[in-house]
Length: 73
Image (tube, rainbow, N blue to C red; front, top):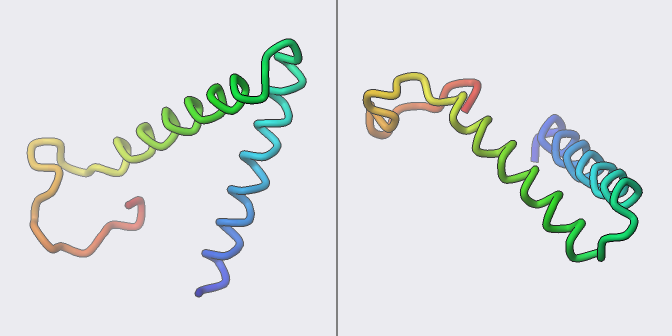
């Protein structure tokens, strides 16, 4: 696996762990499961936003078929 991909994965794991710790400190009266759901919701919203931003042409988001991915994708 390429080095920048490994660094990106490690950065992502550390980032989401820090977000979880921050949510646990802010909402200390909530359970572990509730904090996990909050972080999961933030993660899902972030992923959908980034995926939406990567679409170049909304008239046909999958056109041309079998084309190479752009850098953003």
